[in-house]
Length: 284
Image 1 (cartoon, rainbow, N blue to C red):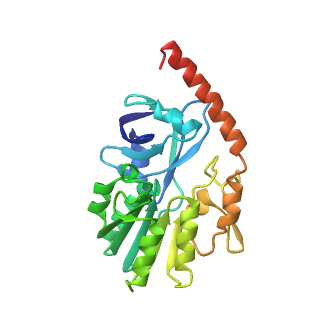
Image 2: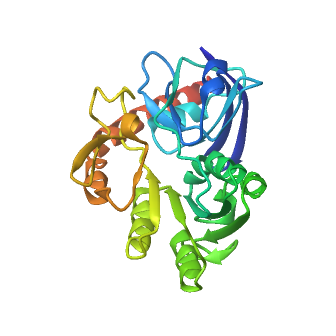
Image 3: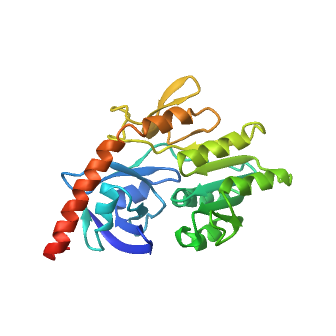
């Protein structure tokens, strides 16, 4: 069992958890993830490690309550426990002095970008973190990102903070102005990572993306997280989660992620009914 030490509500449906997991915290590296199972009847689902404290033995995880399991987790509080927490999984981000690195984080991708920005900055890079969300209320980790980045630039869909538009608009503006970018790391929705990769492709700027598709066992045995990279089939959980964005078959991956939408909706509807019943009975 892994105890939740702290829980904070950051915005509607957005939560930050600090979880006691000393053995994982000792070995965690930027770019890696964990797989959780809330209880013996729960599904396994991956979450990128946003931060860790090896001294305190804790992990920091961000959760958005949008599906059955994430909503179920949002009902947990400090003092509650998670049944299974496996990790750190996946290959760590390559850290060296590349020069100037643009780190593009969309939505919850910002949490995954955070430790990568920190490590790259410490390695001597000029790190420009481009953060994007629908509005200012949903923009995560603004203060934390300023501490670990050389610069922070913001885009919001509604223009409530920073540039009105998308993170790709900010990146494109940098390119148009002739700013030198030696490497790009993009983490967020698949459509965003695809757009970033298409933007940097003609300029041949090395672009890394982090793929977090359907995962079950996290060991490469089930094949659920397979993705075509170039002419090869890869497994995101063991070969990734980071890949060359210019070689990823994003269209194929996006189509595959639609496969279980009917089952996901059914599961959410059933769980929502249980929650509603418990609320009426005064149990929640």
